[in-house]
Length: 222
Image (spheres, rainbow, N blue to C red):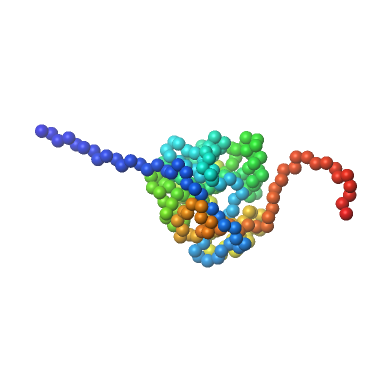
């Protein structure tokens, strides 16, 4: 009697979490120094999580709202990532010609329905191809994230970093008229809600405004 060949059952693939509460930052006066910290540019945009589960891709706000319908161009850009499943932490921004992010331009783009030119800056990876990696050290998560990006990916950018010498990094960021620096412990797991392992140090306060009208003054200035 011939034996039947039984193919081993394939394990069920794990899906990315529906939503992960973001890790938060604490404001400090100066970026920390030392080899245990990495430093990234502080972007001026909307914090977003990109959840990729096969062909199902969505953008989630920091409170878990699904805003995918607002940013269809970004959803299309995320399809270029060489992954089956992923959960990416990042910031959605409008970028000026000089490379600086602008929150006022982001708001204007949303108001006018011009979201096709927005850029998603990816700075952390919490889930990849069936595996949760949120407990890995940050430096390892960023290495895996960087491996997903090529140099030519319109609408997507990997948020690079430097290790050590935070004060010098922040000083250089301020010279370039950037928002400031985000500093993170390189050996830390992702900690939702935590405000101690990631810190932000800002440059001089500045705001951008769109002038929509004015009236001539009725008196004179002293």
